[in-house]
Length: 223
Image 1 (cartoon, rainbow, N blue to C red):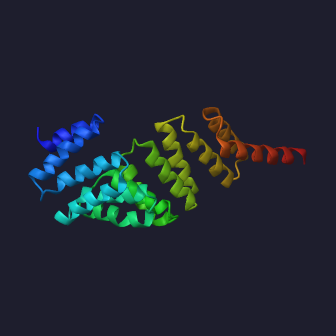
Image 2 (cartoon, helix red, strand yellow):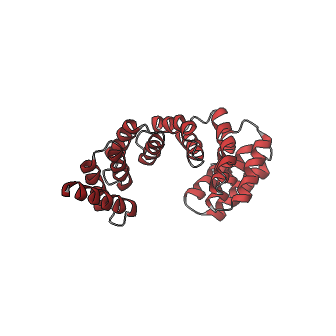
Image 3 (tube, rainbow, N blue to C red):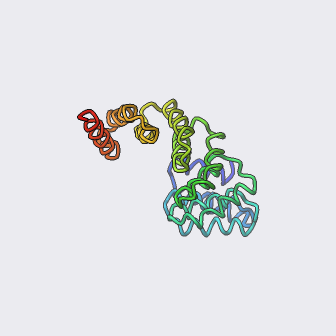
């Protein structure tokens, strides 16, 4: 087992100090090899030392401008700092240089989603769900994106897929309720808001929406 393998093992065991020693050894042994810097950057990300992590990823890119995982790491640094516009380019470069992984597409999609660029976000979130169809959170975010684009029927189908993966996903029920209101199906909406509140009694949005629907139905019945 070489220094990198040992370091990764220590990192997985949350023995960060030992991991740092191994990655330092790897860098000293092969200073022109980007993997040592990438792994040290990942370690610093785990330790929430974002500024130093960025420097390690940048050094890896300096050594190999096609180091896809270094771009991905740098994108994550900017994302964690809330710099979504800045995070886009590294995520795009990670994909461009061959990182055909669900997380790369998902993170690029999220950076666009959080900038309310829903239409550009959609294909990336879709690709993320295609690569990992069992990931409920990626499926959910894709559903939110569809809803923002007023693709209500597609959003409903997607939120139902989320519930197939996790029947206790309160936010999926809440968003199905909102979607039902768009289709003027008040009783169905109420059913989903009730389910959301059964799963998560402190779901404020569902509670507020339920009260509004009940008020509207009550007024309608009085007429």
